[in-house]
Length: 307
Ligand SMILES: Cc1cc2nc3c(=O)[nH]c(=O)nc-3n(C[C@H](O)[C@H](O)[C@H](O)COP(=O)(O)OP(=O)(O)OC[C@H]3O[C@@H](n4cnc5c(N)ncnc54)[C@H](O)[C@@H]3O)c2cc1C
Image (tube, rainbow, N blue to C red; front, side):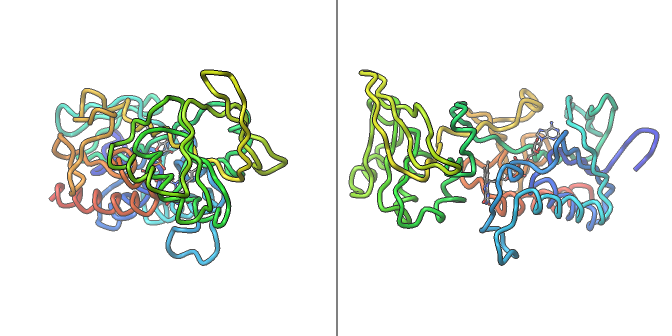
C-alpha cells in the first residue's frame, strides 16, 4: 500500500463470508488488500444464533463468532480491515476510485461482496420472534422443524421452492399468500398442488406472530373478509424475496432486472477488473459456504488479472 494515496492492488467491498474469503486468498496471493467492512462488519450471519451447515463446526456455531473468526483470519494474514462503508465508486478508469469514511482510495481491482438483505414483513411481532421460530431462510432452518407444522409466507418462486423443500421435514406446510393466485411458475404451482403435505391459503396475510419466548402460532387475516384464522405452527418462513446491496454500483455495472450484479462463472462483471462474489450476484443459493466459495474464485481471478 502507498500510504499517501491509499492505493491497494485489491479492494474488497463487503464483510460477509464472500468478502473475508476473498481477502484471505488475496493476501495469501501476495496482493496488498483492503477490505471495507461497513459499520458492523460480519454480514447477514450476524442475525443468526445457530449455524449448522458451515463445514468444520461439529456443534452449531453462533453467526457472530463465525464472522469474527473470518475477520481475525483475514486481518492476521495482512488484510487492512476498515470499519467503513464505501459511499462512492468510480470504475470509469484504472485505477478504480473508491470513497469511504470521507477518504479517497484507489485500487487496481475491486471485488464487490456487498451481499443482500432478506425482505421482511416489517411487523413488531415478526421482529420479536426472528430466530425463535420466524426465519428468512428455509435451507438454513428447515431442519429444525422435523416432524412439526410450519407456514411459508409469499407467493413467488422462492416461496414455492421453500414450501416444497420444507415438506422434507415438516408434517404439513401452509403456504400463505396475500393474493388469490401465486406468482410462482406454472411448473412449481403444479408441484405444490400435487404435494399432499402442502395447503395453499390464498388472500391471507400474517396479522400477528404469537408465542411465549418461542413462536407457537400465527394469526392470519383474510384480506377480503377481515376474518382471522390461527395456524398453530412453531415455524414461519418469510419468503418475500431479497434486496441485493447494489445501490453503490447502479449505472456502473450491468445488473439484472432485480438489481443483482451480472457476473459470469469466473465472477467477472461487465467492467474488467471488477469482480462480484456472494449474495450480491447469487440469485439462487444464498448460502454462506457458496458465498465463501465465490469469494475465493473472485480473489483468484483478481490475482490473475493483476498479472
Ligand atoms: C437470518 C439468516 C440466517 C441465515 N442462516 C444461514 C445458515 O444457517 N447457513 C448459511 O449457509 N447461510 C445462512 N444465511 C445466508 C447467509 O447469511 C448469506 O448467504 C451470506 O451471509 C452471504 O454472504 P455475503 O458475503 O455475500 O454477504 P453478506 O453476508 O450479506 O455481507 C455483506 C456485508 O457487506 C456490507 N456492505 C454492504 N454495502 C457495503 C458498502 N458500500 N461498504 C462496505 N460494506 C458494505 C454489508 O453491511 C454486510 O455486512 C442466513 C441468512 C439470514 C438473513
